[in-house]
Image (cartoon, rainbow, N blue to C red):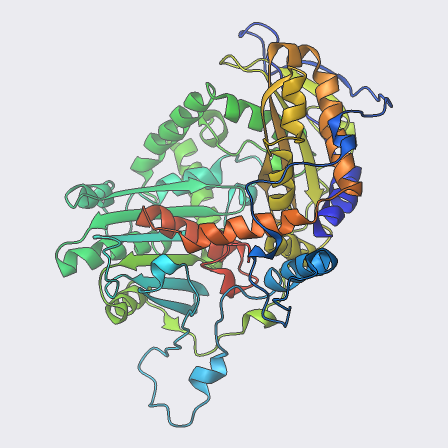
Length: 562
């Protein structure tokens, strides 16, 4: 029923359909043709009317374990109880915590506890993790006054070596949408500048030189609502291990923003943008953003270049940019709310000591239970897809936009924006993730699927569907069709096929898909392996920030549906 709600109430009435084609010469600009979407009432016909036949594999109905709220294991009458089982799984497994963090009262209310050390410590054990981490020691810390959450993972207790390096990641709840209007790319530029030395470690390229001597590396990326920084270095001398972490965490305390670094990093950002101009993914993404309300931060140029950051290449221009950067850092980064992850073969107590030393903060003596957390309010922004064509740089709602790619590409993209009505709705969708189920069906490749129909017609080679943009006040669900030459000519029929399939799902939603997707997610969870600790650390820090409304999803959030 969550899928039906998402399709019926959230997606279809607010649909923006964007079609991207390969048509003309490569010298043409981004947008070469646009016209109102033709409204054709021709009824959709095809094999879908004969019923859905897109079951993947041979997963049997009784394969899922029952939920913990008393669902019976008796499957004698599976057809009769199947709908109930599916709803129970969705509503209890997805709405409940995915692993248990005990109440703070378990750790703090006992009168027999010894006096606290200089920093108060609350032990918050995580009792359910992927099997590959079950032998590791995990500790979740809530630090104050910086309001920073830290997840420590010590692999020292694992019989199977997971890593021989120290990896860390920090996700800051500051992304491109926070940049001041008129300074496009400032958040991205700030990401670059944090690597250019701090008051404690002032050498401009000191961190990279330090890591190069120890077989390490570092990087960062700026997204719409957050920025993630990460690094790794090979395990060596204990002092070196923790110096690398100290250098890294000092980024977020006292960056120096040296005047001499400003122009060099502006050139680096400008070079990055020039490279992106040859990327079809980037070009189409920028086109899509400009179809939203120009008063919404989503419509802005997030990467930035020399013309937006440093229009005047003079000492005064560089000084003004530096002042803007410092103001942005103090206003946004100093708010706190960062989420950090550290993975190391060192002992968990040693890790905690060094992290707290580097952050120079105090561990909070209170930890609110996940169930008591209140969803954060929506940011005060205009509706990005109001349908008022005068508000967007490129027409959006109900319009077809055709553009010319750099590479040979025949592709149709249909964009379904979902504008949240409240913070609670946003968190509900993030927890239940109905797009996982919808994308599973739309992107299915078996008999009776959308792709099988389009292939029989000779119109498509592939179909994919998933969430694309994901902001605090809306997200977009996209269906991308890889067209054949014939499909390009018949794009309107391909469009009808996609919309006809969605319409069919509204009336003939296959109940088994809940079990199917959940079971596949369970298998992925059960056999999950940490192949790249650095990538895993960055994924976890993003999870912690994204699922901040429920800290119990820190590990499970991006890996598990139930």
